Image (cartoon, rainbow, N blue to C red; front, side, top):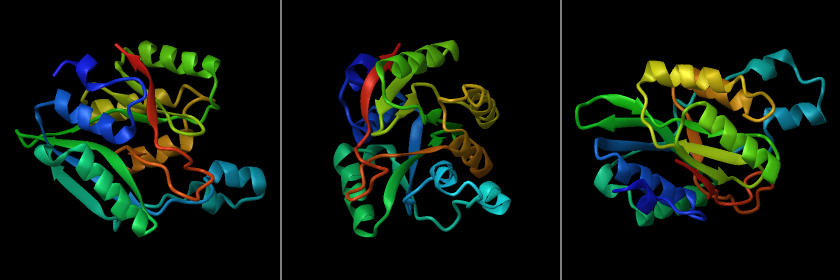
Length: 213
Protein backbone atom coordinates (compact mmCIF):
# COMPACT_ATOMS: atom_id res chain seq x y z
CA UNK A 1 0.00 0.00 0.00
CA UNK A 2 1.25 3.50 -0.86
CA UNK A 3 1.96 5.76 2.09
CA UNK A 4 -0.38 8.47 0.83
CA UNK A 5 -3.22 5.92 1.05
CA UNK A 6 -2.30 4.79 4.55
CA UNK A 7 -1.99 8.13 6.39
CA UNK A 8 -4.17 11.25 6.41
CA UNK A 9 -4.15 14.49 8.40
CA UNK A 10 -6.48 14.07 11.37
CA UNK A 11 -6.01 10.29 11.56
CA UNK A 12 -5.82 9.06 15.17
CA UNK A 13 -3.03 6.96 16.70
CA UNK A 14 -4.74 3.53 16.48
CA UNK A 15 -5.24 3.99 12.74
CA UNK A 16 -1.63 5.20 12.40
CA UNK A 17 -0.51 1.86 13.86
CA UNK A 18 -2.71 0.04 11.34
CA UNK A 19 -1.12 2.11 8.57
CA UNK A 20 2.42 1.28 9.74
CA UNK A 21 1.53 -2.40 9.72
CA UNK A 22 0.17 -2.11 6.19
CA UNK A 23 3.19 -0.40 4.66
CA UNK A 24 5.54 -3.03 6.12
CA UNK A 25 4.45 -6.44 4.82
CA UNK A 26 7.58 -7.91 6.41
CA UNK A 27 6.09 -7.39 9.89
CA UNK A 28 4.67 -10.56 11.43
CA UNK A 29 4.02 -9.35 15.00
CA UNK A 30 3.54 -5.96 16.67
CA UNK A 31 3.87 -5.52 20.41
CA UNK A 32 1.60 -3.53 22.73
CA UNK A 33 1.63 -3.04 26.49
CA UNK A 34 -0.69 -1.92 29.23
CA UNK A 35 0.86 0.37 31.83
CA UNK A 36 -0.25 2.44 34.81
CA UNK A 37 -0.11 6.14 33.86
CA UNK A 38 1.30 8.62 36.36
CA UNK A 39 -0.53 11.80 37.31
CA UNK A 40 2.71 13.79 37.00
CA UNK A 41 5.92 13.19 35.10
CA UNK A 42 9.21 13.64 36.95
CA UNK A 43 9.89 16.88 35.05
CA UNK A 44 6.60 18.34 36.32
CA UNK A 45 7.27 16.96 39.79
CA UNK A 46 10.62 18.75 39.89
CA UNK A 47 8.85 22.05 39.19
CA UNK A 48 6.54 21.43 42.14
CA UNK A 49 9.18 19.86 44.37
CA UNK A 50 12.63 21.31 43.50
CA UNK A 51 14.25 19.30 46.29
CA UNK A 52 13.32 15.92 44.79
CA UNK A 53 15.91 13.32 45.78
CA UNK A 54 18.67 12.15 43.46
CA UNK A 55 17.41 8.59 44.00
CA UNK A 56 14.04 9.50 42.55
CA UNK A 57 15.62 11.51 39.73
CA UNK A 58 17.63 8.58 38.39
CA UNK A 59 15.19 5.78 39.22
CA UNK A 60 14.21 3.65 36.24
CA UNK A 61 11.13 1.45 36.44
CA UNK A 62 11.62 -1.60 34.19
CA UNK A 63 8.71 -2.64 32.01
CA UNK A 64 8.95 -6.20 33.34
CA UNK A 65 5.61 -7.33 34.73
CA UNK A 66 3.54 -5.02 32.57
CA UNK A 67 0.97 -6.84 30.47
CA UNK A 68 2.40 -7.36 26.98
CA UNK A 69 0.26 -8.17 23.95
CA UNK A 70 1.71 -9.54 20.71
CA UNK A 71 -0.63 -9.21 17.74
CA UNK A 72 -0.14 -11.05 14.46
CA UNK A 73 -0.26 -8.61 11.54
CA UNK A 74 -3.71 -9.84 10.46
CA UNK A 75 -5.06 -8.91 13.93
CA UNK A 76 -3.69 -5.35 13.84
CA UNK A 77 -6.99 -3.68 12.98
CA UNK A 78 -8.63 -0.49 14.14
CA UNK A 79 -11.45 -2.44 15.83
CA UNK A 80 -9.06 -4.73 17.72
CA UNK A 81 -6.84 -1.87 18.88
CA UNK A 82 -9.76 0.22 20.09
CA UNK A 83 -11.15 -2.80 21.94
CA UNK A 84 -7.77 -3.27 23.65
CA UNK A 85 -7.75 0.42 24.58
CA UNK A 86 -11.19 0.11 26.21
CA UNK A 87 -10.17 -3.05 28.09
CA UNK A 88 -7.04 -1.31 29.39
CA UNK A 89 -9.05 1.70 30.55
CA UNK A 90 -11.43 -0.52 32.53
CA UNK A 91 -8.35 -1.57 34.53
CA UNK A 92 -7.15 2.03 34.89
CA UNK A 93 -4.36 1.27 32.45
CA UNK A 94 -3.20 2.89 29.21
CA UNK A 95 -2.33 1.03 26.00
CA UNK A 96 0.93 1.81 24.22
CA UNK A 97 2.58 0.66 21.00
CA UNK A 98 6.11 -0.69 21.53
CA UNK A 99 8.75 0.01 18.91
CA UNK A 100 9.91 -3.60 18.56
CA UNK A 101 8.41 -5.62 15.74
CA UNK A 102 9.13 -9.17 14.60
CA UNK A 103 9.41 -10.10 10.93
CA UNK A 104 8.60 -13.31 9.05
CA UNK A 105 12.35 -14.00 9.04
CA UNK A 106 12.40 -14.03 12.87
CA UNK A 107 14.32 -10.75 12.94
CA UNK A 108 13.63 -7.89 15.34
CA UNK A 109 13.44 -4.28 14.21
CA UNK A 110 12.27 -1.00 15.70
CA UNK A 111 9.78 1.59 14.51
CA UNK A 112 11.55 4.86 15.42
CA UNK A 113 9.15 6.77 17.69
CA UNK A 114 9.57 9.98 19.70
CA UNK A 115 7.79 11.84 22.46
CA UNK A 116 8.25 15.63 22.47
CA UNK A 117 7.79 18.04 25.37
CA UNK A 118 7.65 21.40 23.57
CA UNK A 119 4.38 23.30 23.78
CA UNK A 120 1.91 23.34 20.91
CA UNK A 121 2.46 26.17 18.42
CA UNK A 122 2.92 26.66 14.69
CA UNK A 123 6.54 27.68 15.35
CA UNK A 124 7.32 24.57 17.39
CA UNK A 125 5.61 22.27 14.90
CA UNK A 126 7.74 23.79 12.13
CA UNK A 127 10.87 23.12 14.23
CA UNK A 128 9.84 19.51 14.83
CA UNK A 129 9.26 19.08 11.09
CA UNK A 130 12.68 20.58 10.36
CA UNK A 131 14.24 18.24 12.93
CA UNK A 132 12.65 15.17 11.35
CA UNK A 133 13.96 16.18 7.93
CA UNK A 134 17.41 16.90 9.36
CA UNK A 135 17.49 13.30 10.60
CA UNK A 136 16.70 12.23 7.02
CA UNK A 137 13.50 10.71 8.36
CA UNK A 138 10.05 10.25 6.88
CA UNK A 139 6.98 9.74 9.01
CA UNK A 140 4.01 11.34 10.74
CA UNK A 141 3.85 13.92 13.53
CA UNK A 142 0.86 13.72 15.85
CA UNK A 143 -0.47 16.29 18.29
CA UNK A 144 -0.61 14.44 21.62
CA UNK A 145 -2.57 16.91 23.70
CA UNK A 146 0.14 19.10 25.20
CA UNK A 147 2.95 18.36 22.73
CA UNK A 148 3.77 16.04 19.81
CA UNK A 149 4.51 12.39 18.99
CA UNK A 150 6.45 11.06 16.00
CA UNK A 151 6.19 7.72 14.16
CA UNK A 152 8.70 6.89 11.43
CA UNK A 153 7.93 5.09 8.18
CA UNK A 154 11.29 3.31 8.55
CA UNK A 155 12.34 0.18 10.41
CA UNK A 156 15.75 0.06 12.12
CA UNK A 157 17.83 -2.78 13.58
CA UNK A 158 18.54 -2.39 17.28
CA UNK A 159 22.04 -0.88 16.97
CA UNK A 160 20.84 1.80 14.54
CA UNK A 161 17.78 2.46 16.70
CA UNK A 162 20.01 3.16 19.72
CA UNK A 163 22.04 5.64 17.63
CA UNK A 164 18.81 7.25 16.41
CA UNK A 165 17.55 7.69 19.98
CA UNK A 166 20.91 9.02 21.17
CA UNK A 167 21.02 11.58 18.37
CA UNK A 168 17.55 12.86 19.20
CA UNK A 169 18.80 13.78 22.68
CA UNK A 170 20.68 16.65 21.02
CA UNK A 171 17.37 18.33 20.15
CA UNK A 172 17.19 19.82 23.65
CA UNK A 173 14.14 21.80 24.64
CA UNK A 174 11.96 19.86 22.23
CA UNK A 175 12.31 16.11 22.84
CA UNK A 176 11.38 14.55 26.18
CA UNK A 177 14.92 13.68 27.30
CA UNK A 178 13.86 11.66 30.34
CA UNK A 179 11.46 9.62 28.22
CA UNK A 180 14.27 8.82 25.76
CA UNK A 181 16.61 7.81 28.59
CA UNK A 182 14.01 5.41 29.99
CA UNK A 183 13.30 3.97 26.54
CA UNK A 184 16.98 3.30 25.82
CA UNK A 185 17.33 1.59 29.21
CA UNK A 186 14.25 -0.54 28.45
CA UNK A 187 15.51 -1.43 25.00
CA UNK A 188 12.42 -0.22 23.15
CA UNK A 189 10.34 2.91 22.68
CA UNK A 190 6.61 3.18 23.29
CA UNK A 191 3.87 5.73 22.76
CA UNK A 192 0.37 6.08 24.17
CA UNK A 193 -2.49 5.37 21.75
CA UNK A 194 -5.45 7.09 23.39
CA UNK A 195 -6.63 9.71 25.84
CA UNK A 196 -7.35 8.79 29.45
CA UNK A 197 -10.66 10.06 30.79
CA UNK A 198 -10.26 12.28 33.83
CA UNK A 199 -6.52 12.75 33.32
CA UNK A 200 -5.06 16.26 33.15
CA UNK A 201 -1.96 14.88 31.46
CA UNK A 202 -3.34 12.59 28.73
CA UNK A 203 -6.12 14.82 27.48
CA UNK A 204 -6.62 13.61 23.91
CA UNK A 205 -6.11 10.71 21.55
CA UNK A 206 -3.06 11.69 19.47
CA UNK A 207 -3.82 12.55 15.83
CA UNK A 208 -1.77 13.38 12.75
CA UNK A 209 -1.00 17.04 12.12
CA UNK A 210 1.88 16.63 9.66
CA UNK A 211 3.14 14.02 7.19
CA UNK A 212 6.84 14.18 6.28
CA UNK A 213 7.67 12.58 2.92
